[in-house]
Length: 173
Image 1: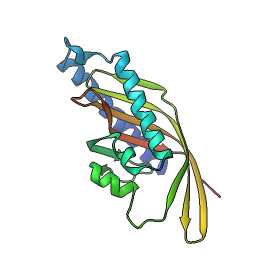
Image 2: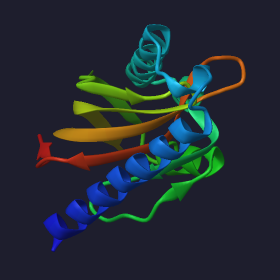
Image 3: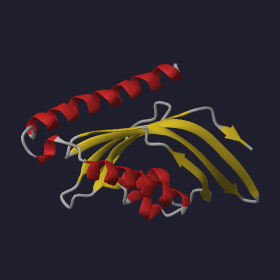
């Protein structure tokens, strides 16, 4: 059942990209919005790197700055969508939660596509973290895949508007 939910979510995410990107292409078919430039590709990759570096620095505010204000998370395992930057902050950085430190985050960017206003990036990731609960520390790791829908802001920067991921088997030490 879990694999079925993951497959459905991945299909839903791909449908969003497949339907939104062509609409944006048609809307700006003669202007700069119709192409994803090399500078856009570089900026999208830089945003993903900023996201990675912010997690490794355990800097919650920097992580959140890589997202649009209307961002949505589509978590793994059929969890409900997390809608808005405030909700994302509460989801990932729960006040009073056990101290959690990201110790490793590897992200590949295997494909970037889209146009000058809306794009996607997809790839693989692997994340390791430590949770401290009293005197006990538990180390976790899992590989995964991700799909980001990226939005170009009026200032020309790119941010993550939708972040979807799937986790491989978790390893706990």
